[in-house]
Length: 256
Image (cartoon, rainbow, N blue to C red; front, side, top):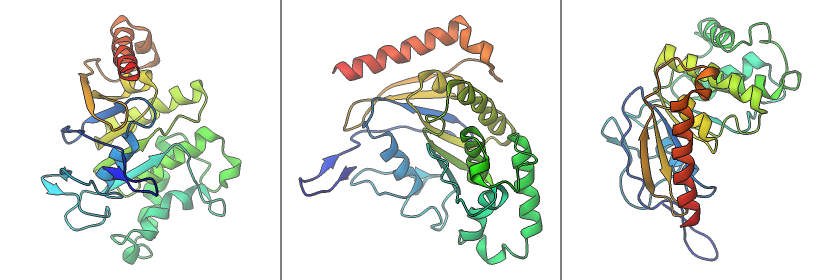
């Protein structure tokens, strides 16, 4: 994949060949600008590759998430981007109001959708905050609400682009557990882009390391740590060794 511009095409992704199983949690790590986010855009249908193929369930990804036969996709980003004039609950419900698959029936099923949103907010620890405005929530609470918004329509695939990068270390670790618990309950497929190698090791079933731009997959590492994982896991020898292996590969990439 390349980006066009006045100075000519800028290559973003070269050979990013990988296969992800249904229900698997995968993390992408690599130096800044290596094409991790571009790869997510291709998978989401928000951008099209110049060559090669991207498929879900064997079907080519050919446009927006809502194109025929596509798996449903949820997305969350580094910034929660909640609409300030809507309550927490209303922000979570937003995808159901605007999606072409659900907007026609939203009013008729509104009570059902509200119940689902309240249940999600309860799971992530936001029970009692449904009617609060975004400015009344901390950064971590907004990111919890953002996860609920990405999951409210029951997606098969969740794409996460550094969702916890802007948070302090303690809040970030709390949200690792929130996300892990949601995934263990629902077993949607996840692709997580992160610069935090501990985060990748904690959450993923498999970690892919990408090269400098244009991005290539240069290393693949299964994560054999048992689940559920806890903060104590991060101090265990196998976890620390895994993080060191990933760090060594990133160092090699940066030095290349």
